[in-house]
Amino acid sequence: MRLPTFCSISLLAATTVAYDDLLRFNASPQVETRSIDNIYKAALKEGDVVTAWMGGDENNRQGAVKVAFKKAFPGVKLNLTVDLSKYHEGNIDEQLANGKIYVDTLGLQTLQGFPRWKEEGALLNYAPLGFDKIYPDFRDIDAAYYGFRGLSWQLIWNTDKLKGKAPQAYPDFLRPEFKEELPQKYGTSWFNTLLQQKLRWVRGSATGPALVTDPNTTYVATFTSGLRLLKPQGPLNATFPKQGQFVSWPQAAAILKDAPHTEGAKLFHTFLLSNDFQKQSGFWSVRSDVPAPVGYLKFIEMPGTNPWAFSNFMEDRTRVERLRFWFEKRLVTPQGLSPLDDDL
Image 1 (cartoon, rainbow, N blue to C red):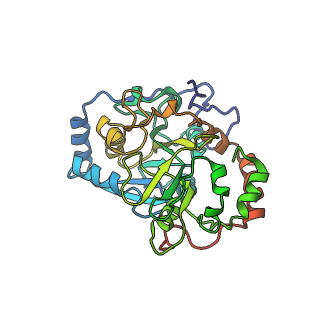
Image 2: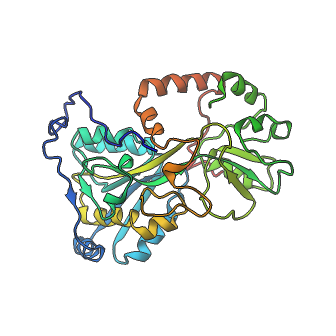
Image 3: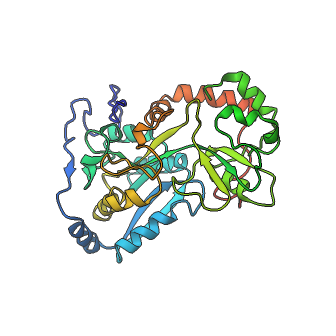
């Protein structure tokens, strides 16, 4: 399966561009040749605190990453802040505009920001250990940014609450047993029928599974989130649709060129791409030499999805706005607090 390349080159000049990206002056990446032990020593010598901003919709969303990094590299302090990727993106733009960079590394879902930041000369062209093993379609040709984790949406249900047949495709959510109990290839007719099921629409991909898991709610299923690709723990189970498409994408990472702690950031990126982390994260690996989680095909081999289509969609902001307004007219604008603050 061949996907469009992860590299996106713009022909438009920006006032903040430090060089002509079309001709790729100063584009040669720093290719890491040191061992991870030597990178670790350099990070310890650099000292201070490495600041990482990662996308997520609950404060504990990246807790496993922080714990694993701390265990692997004692003495290197990591300040990992979780927020919605779209808010991180705006805050990074503000730092760049003011020339006051205090964030070292990013890991975001808003993939459209990375080509723009590269064009502005804001990213460090750095190829960490393992970079050459990343699927070519998931890495920028100049190593300005690259995927580090494969994510997707799934069909999720509570096995304790749903006694009938588990959902296998999106039309299954039109069945009577899902009416009022739920927190797009099928067109407007399917969507309008879905609205008659009186779903509860919530903010954040973690909120749906939380409500479905709660034994004190009647919600039985959700299809706007994803679980780790591991053996089910607790009442939740998940699958991918047997018919139709599902959304998947490589969450991307980059180091800011003017980051105050580049050695610590390089260590963090090498850690994210390491064989151990890629195998144990519970998600798809972006590396071609790491096997898929048990019971699944590799990321780029999964039927019914194109991991790069999401990035192409996100970069077309005019199209995104049209679709957002279409949904807002039918669902109203998002209501309530940020999912990081709503206690759900």
